[in-house]
Length: 525
Image 1 (cartoon, rainbow, N blue to C red):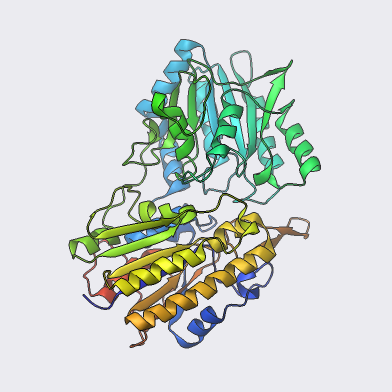
Image 2 (image 1 turned 135 degrees about the vertical axis):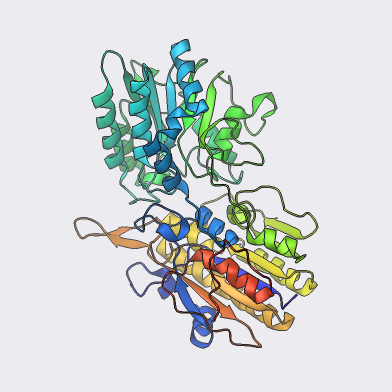
């Protein structure tokens, strides 16, 4: 085995010369500055077609980014996967879709759609919901209820009313004597329902109570709820409290026995917990669900194939094979992965091709640092120090040929919209990177530094009127890729098509391992 390789993923740290809202540029980053000034580096693509998304207008995200980093290939992902299934009609011919439709037609119940209401193409796309609404009516469903999660994170921070208007117009056009479609409940994605990695089950309970039981502050319409909460709290869309749509004092869309429920998000991390609540049975104990209705429940995809969550789903996730971990296991190379809770699944599950199980219990070691349950701009350093301690300990043990870690700071703090906190977050990562760099030198290892997508590099944007507004979504910017070998200078090829999927082949070459034939090429000259 060649020298150990350490890969640091600075989550959400993109690369751009543009200054507006660029907290990466504004931050004091002596370690990154020195590496870029003295070592081989380049930018690589981390969005759009480079990570399997429909077009280069689609921002990358941590899930598809870590899939690409970990497998050395490009798979159709997320929105592209669903688009292809809807266009071909395959999704509506699926056994699950037909079962859910038949169920409500037989029971006389409602078909419920729960999901993120935007066209951000990261967790969901409103066009998928609209296509399913139209098909449901076409197939004879009489009653539909939509439970909407407000975005403001993958799309402009206060754009919710645009998407609500689009959905309301669609429902109005569909509604007639044979079809009754309405919005039933909702709330901001960072307040209800869409927790991940079991960091805050309270969010999921709030969502469950609102969507299922209709328990929450009542309004006559989603528009009224959003406008009222904005005036009262000043919060952006992702942070708006839960609401219920009521008529004559009663919620219009509780979920009851005989109903069918579809979670139309296609990304898995923030869909798992609600799926567990619906599918969990009597043994579910993460929170008190109250009376649990007897429903048919399905996800857009199966969000975790190893744990079979959910049991029913409309289409299969990409079957990723020939990952870097598989290659290293085949060659007997031990590896170590760590992050804090917020990105732990990214360096394990997503890195290994959407697989919860290890390929080898003896050659793979994973460690998780529990994340704080708080708004990350209150503590922008997060658990970076603890993650760094683990990486250094792994290096000093001399047990591993490949070590990878993820610092979530640039992404998780960036999503809050707090520019000052994000600047501190980037500086925190730089301080920790200095410690890793020193440990790499002492261990005789090689350091690779990259990111999975941008975010902290574009915290502000101009709206349609030319006014500067906060931006909480990922950016479309490329990300850095730096190679630091204290003993040798490894030159990089100059190919503008290189993206995240070229990282695994580069790691393999540095480790002296023959890559899979299906992989993209290494970036080393």
